[in-house]
Image (cartoon, rainbow, N blue to C red; front, top):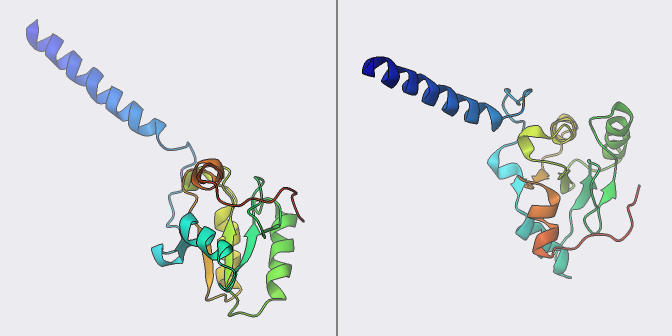
Length: 157
């Protein structure tokens, strides 16, 4: 009888751990490799420093999500929507391939975001060697706004 109770407790424990692990990933978790490398991420503090430095060359910043705009960013709308992604691609086609471009969304954690992969892939396919993704791993509120980094008062499109 003791062996049955121990075995039952062990099984319950295993299922509890598996259940907890499965809740950390969305049902449609991104199983494919992310299209960016670690070197193609720009940290929020680094971008904020560039924006604050009057002598720094500013990158072109595109909001490819639906959240608040970073100061100086052009809002393209959610790139998960075909018409917004096409507008973003058209905008990119008018830029020199060596332009420094930063894209961001910030709606949710990277592994759940429906916008960053299509936009970053568009950068890559467009041949942009200086294309980077703002590392808003949690969301824009946590990783940018709560740190006091600059945001626009009005959304631009």
